[in-house]
Image (cartoon, rainbow, N blue to C red; front, side, top):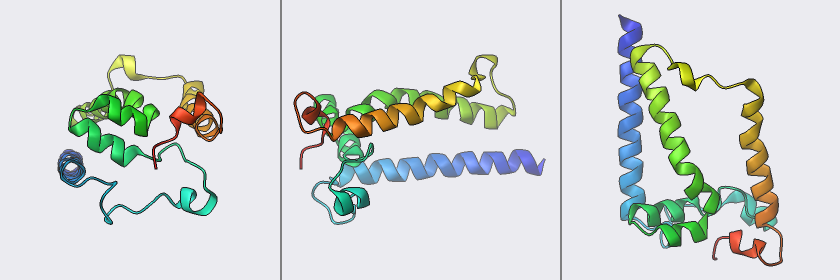
Length: 138
């Protein structure tokens, strides 16, 4: 019984934390607030990491501005539905104690996300068109 209680507590905590974080991003524009620090990689090297612009993109997405969000971080906007489905499946697995049969992924697919992130990192730091459109506006 404690195991089921612990799983439910973790799930409730995750939902509350997501709600609080989402409300904060919705209310406070990261581009205009000192609450959100700049990307350390950008500050130290001048390069855009794969996550640069994600806070501003999420702010615009929560306001229904998909095109504006895509201008800040296209990869995050494209991967958000995948992340929501993944989190929902994981939450379901936590609540029931078992994974649905279609969720089992071959080990080699776990290399796909890091490869996409590395490719996005390289492409968004190239200084010629069309790759300059992947960099978030300053």
